[in-house]
Length: 223
Image (cartoon, rainbow, N blue to C red; front, top):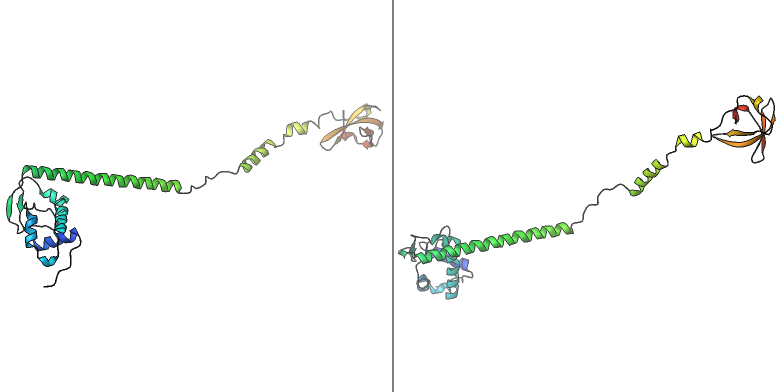
Protein backbone atom coordinates (compact mmCIF):
# COMPACT_ATOMS: atom_id res chain seq x y z
CA UNK A 1 0.00 0.00 0.00
CA UNK A 2 1.33 3.46 -0.91
CA UNK A 3 2.15 5.89 1.88
CA UNK A 4 -0.50 8.50 2.62
CA UNK A 5 0.32 12.25 2.34
CA UNK A 6 1.97 13.40 5.56
CA UNK A 7 -0.20 15.50 7.84
CA UNK A 8 1.59 18.84 8.31
CA UNK A 9 -0.38 20.61 11.04
CA UNK A 10 -2.20 19.86 14.30
CA UNK A 11 -5.43 20.98 12.65
CA UNK A 12 -5.02 18.36 9.94
CA UNK A 13 -4.17 15.69 12.52
CA UNK A 14 -7.29 16.51 14.58
CA UNK A 15 -9.42 16.38 11.40
CA UNK A 16 -7.95 12.94 10.64
CA UNK A 17 -8.64 11.68 14.19
CA UNK A 18 -12.25 12.95 13.96
CA UNK A 19 -12.72 10.90 10.77
CA UNK A 20 -11.02 7.74 12.06
CA UNK A 21 -12.52 7.79 15.57
CA UNK A 22 -15.79 9.82 15.35
CA UNK A 23 -17.16 8.29 18.59
CA UNK A 24 -14.16 9.75 20.48
CA UNK A 25 -12.95 12.92 18.72
CA UNK A 26 -15.61 15.51 17.92
CA UNK A 27 -14.94 17.87 14.99
CA UNK A 28 -17.49 20.50 16.06
CA UNK A 29 -19.37 21.39 19.20
CA UNK A 30 -18.65 20.36 22.80
CA UNK A 31 -15.98 17.65 22.91
CA UNK A 32 -16.06 14.52 25.06
CA UNK A 33 -13.50 13.95 27.85
CA UNK A 34 -10.80 11.54 26.60
CA UNK A 35 -9.67 8.36 28.27
CA UNK A 36 -6.51 8.73 30.36
CA UNK A 37 -3.67 7.11 28.37
CA UNK A 38 -5.42 7.52 25.03
CA UNK A 39 -2.13 8.61 23.46
CA UNK A 40 -0.76 5.06 23.63
CA UNK A 41 -3.98 3.70 22.15
CA UNK A 42 -3.57 6.06 19.20
CA UNK A 43 0.05 5.02 18.63
CA UNK A 44 -1.05 1.41 18.41
CA UNK A 45 -4.07 1.94 16.14
CA UNK A 46 -2.94 4.62 13.67
CA UNK A 47 -1.58 2.91 10.52
CA UNK A 48 2.15 3.30 9.92
CA UNK A 49 1.53 4.50 6.37
CA UNK A 50 0.08 7.73 7.78
CA UNK A 51 3.65 8.82 8.61
CA UNK A 52 2.33 10.44 11.78
CA UNK A 53 5.13 10.95 14.31
CA UNK A 54 4.62 10.80 18.07
CA UNK A 55 5.63 14.45 18.30
CA UNK A 56 2.88 15.45 15.87
CA UNK A 57 0.37 13.32 17.74
CA UNK A 58 1.26 14.82 21.14
CA UNK A 59 1.05 18.34 19.71
CA UNK A 60 -2.38 17.65 18.16
CA UNK A 61 -3.71 16.17 21.43
CA UNK A 62 -2.42 19.21 23.34
CA UNK A 63 -4.24 21.56 20.96
CA UNK A 64 -7.44 19.49 21.13
CA UNK A 65 -7.54 19.20 24.94
CA UNK A 66 -6.73 22.89 25.50
CA UNK A 67 -9.50 24.13 23.24
CA UNK A 68 -12.47 25.89 24.83
CA UNK A 69 -14.96 23.37 23.51
CA UNK A 70 -13.02 20.54 25.15
CA UNK A 71 -12.60 22.42 28.47
CA UNK A 72 -16.36 23.10 28.49
CA UNK A 73 -16.91 19.33 28.31
CA UNK A 74 -14.78 18.69 31.42
CA UNK A 75 -17.52 19.08 34.02
CA UNK A 76 -18.85 17.22 36.99
CA UNK A 77 -20.69 14.02 36.05
CA UNK A 78 -19.17 13.77 32.55
CA UNK A 79 -17.76 10.39 31.42
CA UNK A 80 -14.45 9.78 29.68
CA UNK A 81 -14.47 7.76 26.43
CA UNK A 82 -11.98 5.57 24.57
CA UNK A 83 -11.32 5.58 20.81
CA UNK A 84 -14.50 3.64 20.16
CA UNK A 85 -16.69 5.84 22.36
CA UNK A 86 -16.87 3.38 25.25
CA UNK A 87 -17.21 4.86 28.74
CA UNK A 88 -13.97 4.76 30.74
CA UNK A 89 -14.94 6.25 34.11
CA UNK A 90 -16.24 9.58 35.37
CA UNK A 91 -14.14 12.70 35.80
CA UNK A 92 -12.45 13.40 39.12
CA UNK A 93 -13.11 16.68 40.91
CA UNK A 94 -9.50 17.82 40.57
CA UNK A 95 -9.64 17.36 36.80
CA UNK A 96 -12.85 19.39 36.61
CA UNK A 97 -11.32 22.20 38.70
CA UNK A 98 -8.14 22.20 36.62
CA UNK A 99 -10.17 22.49 33.40
CA UNK A 100 -12.21 25.34 34.90
CA UNK A 101 -9.04 27.27 35.77
CA UNK A 102 -7.60 26.70 32.30
CA UNK A 103 -10.79 27.99 30.72
CA UNK A 104 -10.80 31.14 32.89
CA UNK A 105 -7.15 31.82 32.09
CA UNK A 106 -7.79 31.34 28.37
CA UNK A 107 -10.72 33.76 28.46
CA UNK A 108 -8.63 36.29 30.40
CA UNK A 109 -5.85 36.10 27.80
CA UNK A 110 -8.31 36.63 24.97
CA UNK A 111 -9.91 39.59 26.77
CA UNK A 112 -6.49 41.15 27.43
CA UNK A 113 -5.49 40.64 23.81
CA UNK A 114 -8.68 42.28 22.54
CA UNK A 115 -8.26 45.20 24.97
CA UNK A 116 -4.70 45.69 23.69
CA UNK A 117 -5.91 45.64 20.10
CA UNK A 118 -8.58 48.26 20.87
CA UNK A 119 -6.02 50.44 22.63
CA UNK A 120 -3.59 50.18 19.73
CA UNK A 121 -6.38 50.93 17.26
CA UNK A 122 -7.34 54.07 19.21
CA UNK A 123 -3.71 55.16 19.40
CA UNK A 124 -3.35 54.57 15.66
CA UNK A 125 -6.50 56.60 14.92
CA UNK A 126 -5.24 59.40 17.16
CA UNK A 127 -1.91 59.37 15.34
CA UNK A 128 -3.64 59.57 11.97
CA UNK A 129 -5.77 62.47 13.20
CA UNK A 130 -2.64 64.33 14.33
CA UNK A 131 -0.97 63.76 10.97
CA UNK A 132 -4.05 64.75 9.00
CA UNK A 133 -3.71 68.36 7.69
CA UNK A 134 -6.13 70.68 9.35
CA UNK A 135 -8.40 72.87 7.28
CA UNK A 136 -7.55 76.56 7.68
CA UNK A 137 -10.07 78.53 9.68
CA UNK A 138 -11.90 81.06 7.55
CA UNK A 139 -10.94 84.53 8.67
CA UNK A 140 -11.69 87.96 7.33
CA UNK A 141 -8.58 89.62 5.87
CA UNK A 142 -6.97 91.88 8.41
CA UNK A 143 -6.38 94.51 5.76
CA UNK A 144 -10.08 94.58 4.95
CA UNK A 145 -11.01 95.01 8.61
CA UNK A 146 -8.41 97.72 8.98
CA UNK A 147 -9.69 99.42 5.86
CA UNK A 148 -13.24 99.37 7.18
CA UNK A 149 -12.04 100.84 10.48
CA UNK A 150 -10.07 103.52 8.67
CA UNK A 151 -13.05 104.39 6.52
CA UNK A 152 -15.16 104.82 9.63
CA UNK A 153 -12.52 106.96 11.30
CA UNK A 154 -12.04 109.02 8.12
CA UNK A 155 -15.74 109.77 7.72
CA UNK A 156 -16.01 113.51 7.27
CA UNK A 157 -17.35 115.44 10.20
CA UNK A 158 -19.63 117.78 8.41
CA UNK A 159 -20.47 119.87 11.45
CA UNK A 160 -16.92 120.95 12.34
CA UNK A 161 -15.39 121.40 8.87
CA UNK A 162 -18.31 123.05 7.16
CA UNK A 163 -19.32 125.41 9.95
CA UNK A 164 -15.81 126.83 10.53
CA UNK A 165 -15.29 128.50 7.13
CA UNK A 166 -18.87 129.72 7.06
CA UNK A 167 -18.53 131.54 10.34
CA UNK A 168 -19.10 135.26 10.05
CA UNK A 169 -21.99 137.66 9.63
CA UNK A 170 -22.97 138.29 5.99
CA UNK A 171 -22.90 141.88 4.68
CA UNK A 172 -26.43 142.96 3.72
CA UNK A 173 -25.81 146.70 3.33
CA UNK A 174 -22.55 147.99 1.83
CA UNK A 175 -23.31 151.48 3.04
CA UNK A 176 -22.14 150.50 6.47
CA UNK A 177 -18.70 149.59 5.15
CA UNK A 178 -15.74 151.99 5.40
CA UNK A 179 -12.50 152.17 3.45
CA UNK A 180 -9.69 150.42 5.30
CA UNK A 181 -12.14 148.23 7.21
CA UNK A 182 -11.12 144.56 7.57
CA UNK A 183 -13.55 142.22 5.86
CA UNK A 184 -13.79 138.55 4.85
CA UNK A 185 -14.35 137.38 1.32
CA UNK A 186 -16.09 134.05 0.71
CA UNK A 187 -14.30 131.82 -1.76
CA UNK A 188 -16.26 128.57 -2.15
CA UNK A 189 -16.67 126.93 1.27
CA UNK A 190 -13.94 129.01 2.88
CA UNK A 191 -13.40 132.71 3.55
CA UNK A 192 -10.20 134.76 3.37
CA UNK A 193 -9.20 137.98 5.07
CA UNK A 194 -9.25 141.23 3.06
CA UNK A 195 -9.35 145.04 3.45
CA UNK A 196 -11.93 147.39 1.93
CA UNK A 197 -10.29 149.71 -0.67
CA UNK A 198 -13.32 151.30 -2.36
CA UNK A 199 -17.11 151.12 -2.20
CA UNK A 200 -19.05 151.67 -5.46
CA UNK A 201 -22.24 150.65 -7.23
CA UNK A 202 -20.42 147.84 -9.02
CA UNK A 203 -19.44 146.33 -5.68
CA UNK A 204 -16.78 146.55 -3.06
CA UNK A 205 -13.14 146.71 -4.14
CA UNK A 206 -10.99 144.80 -1.67
CA UNK A 207 -7.38 143.81 -1.28
CA UNK A 208 -6.63 140.28 -0.20
CA UNK A 209 -3.88 139.39 2.27
CA UNK A 210 -1.88 138.13 -0.69
CA UNK A 211 -1.91 141.67 -2.19
CA UNK A 212 -4.42 140.88 -4.92
CA UNK A 213 -7.11 143.56 -5.41
CA UNK A 214 -10.55 142.65 -6.74
CA UNK A 215 -14.17 143.81 -6.85
CA UNK A 216 -16.52 141.60 -4.83
CA UNK A 217 -20.31 141.57 -4.80
CA UNK A 218 -21.92 142.18 -1.37
CA UNK A 219 -23.29 138.61 -1.02
CA UNK A 220 -19.70 137.32 -1.01
CA UNK A 221 -18.66 139.50 1.95
CA UNK A 222 -18.70 138.76 5.68
CA UNK A 223 -17.85 140.81 8.72
